[in-house]
Length: 395
Image (cartoon, rainbow, N blue to C red; front, side):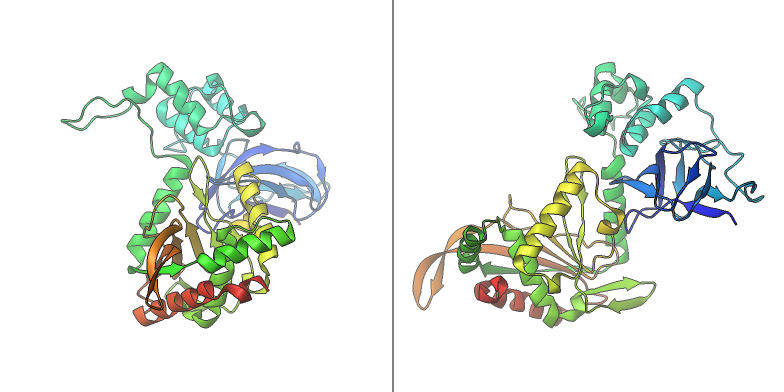
């Protein structure tokens, strides 16, 4: 019986992906777990492995866009014909950036878009600007064309300006950058989050002087760098154990509560923001958190992060060390997200004396559909108690 190969979900909010390349030819025999394709979403690339064995039969071409769970190939038994209801067999591959899947692009551009190593965002941007991506000089990893390469080429050719309708009264722009690729995906997710939730933010300034001192001491003792975000992840895990309603997800009218704490950690990339997930943080010590976070951040920046690392978060932390405070926006579905500003030395009153302490303003955004103010306040108070008495964090 034919084994269906479908477009995998590479993130909680992914709706479609691109078959960047096939690593096997039609008619090749494929074993289970063999890599058969490179799949790309707006945020990650992924080597797709076969879930069975058989004769490889693709139903879309390289460069094709397919919806999540849509059939992109089959694995057939010897002599077996593809299923008769194969929808994609007679269709043209949908190339990235096509506004109308049925609209035919010039053959030269379609071919180039399929064979030029490039990110999905770069291909979509090139299509929207009318840029022949085969003429763009790549600067990305593994010789790929990235968004900035297309922008640079478009600016040189004057293409970006010619495709932009300038609102009345504005001066002539010196640069035009379409909202596309990862930035477009982020924008859509944030709009969805704000439209579907009742977001309310709470603020509390917390003394992290002792936590910073102990962090430095432990880093020296272990010979491993423990950063402030690692400490905050551990502290959030401890606080969530007592404020469990925040460790929840709203899905299809139901609030799902969890005893496993999976914390999403925002990682800033040049193209935008990704949120890989640390799983079961409550079972990790500070060194394990350090190692796991570093590994995820490296993979995210190299574009090699696995799909499983991008899904399943129950709570998120965003550390923005360049400002005193900010109001983070919920990841769709989650009930809470914690923002941390920059550490700042300030005069504070301790036991009637004015002393200099290192302080951080924390901002907790919660969905008021799920989280009442008293619950949010209890979480911040528990977080404060944990960070200002940090001995247990480093056990």
